[in-house]
Image (cartoon, rainbow, N blue to C red; front, side):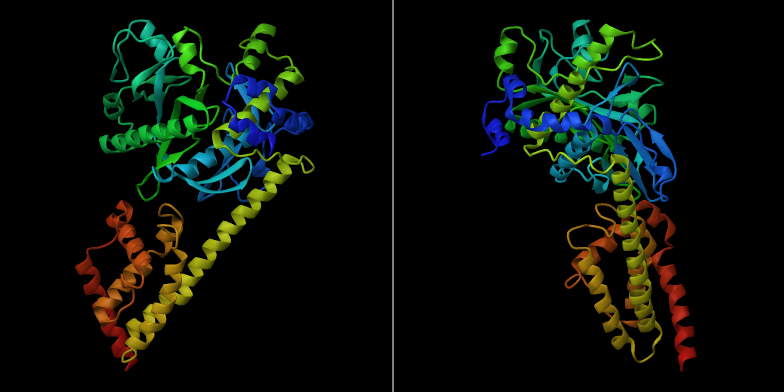
Length: 483
């Protein structure tokens, strides 16, 4: 039995973290990777399809036309600047999010298209809501906007949540609460639901849906974390609206950077004794810089000791393996990380474009032309319709396992070829043939229904009677010309 599995069977404690055999297994890989951390990316110079670059604290985001390419680096930030690069941190954050995105599909759709590299996620473009949905299950924290700081200073209403008297630091709340924030110039500002609507940040319907999803995600995350020996204390979620108007989960989910985790088995005893909960602390690097320089004002910061860098890397890996209950894949450093990522992104984007070109050509050559033949071939309508139906069945198979051709939501492929379904319905009615029926093509039938419900499609399609009237005239011209 592997040391990783043995550790998972023990009650999770800080002793497991400090003395784990698994730590010994990965420490050599961590040390050898210090010089090959992903500190900076310039993929717009190596991948032709990538346009602009936005550099965040940890992520570099590239515009790939129909998609966004999100690269999670190894940068460690605090004091509004980069302190160091931590081996494998980016991989941990990206793969933790991908694990949770997959686990929570029953709660909400997300923007993930693919993950061509351990540090990379390709995502659908969304209109991002300027609100972070912070969910809390405990009265804790030390920052100015933390729930405990606000509570101990006398507030009994926070972001629209009424709080009772008598709560203690680190106490579990009677029910999880949502404490949303919105971005100011250099910090987050807590807001109430009413303020979000009044400020025009979201509509009431959008806010209600996103709030329900956030609370459901957190409740599910707490349940899974507890099964794995952890308490999910608080976290944040971000949402965006896709091209079809659907609200999608974006950014990151339940990662060690976006969430606070405590060790579960020792929480109750320590809380009763007035002690701080055990946690997999990542603050020691920040404290080292605070003790050895002025991180806010010094132009050049000292290099952090290698042992601290390695220790922090191990803690990220430990959290990944504990949260997901899976073994972390330590990648070889033989190929430079930037070269590897460039190669994988280029391949993934090429595959997406090739897939799109194939389906557009298939729609055009095999579906549109045969439907048109059924529409214009007087006396051969049924024969041509049978050929068109066979090609439409191929489309039916392409929808297996997903609601839309683009994946979870309507994408550019659906919009580009959506007129095929509309055209098929027009031809069915005018020449009395059967092209798309619910019994043999349920997925295509459902896709067409959803497609026609998209607001932008609804707004751009003429009334049905007008479409029929126009095309009946067109049909008459074609059939007269063919005789």
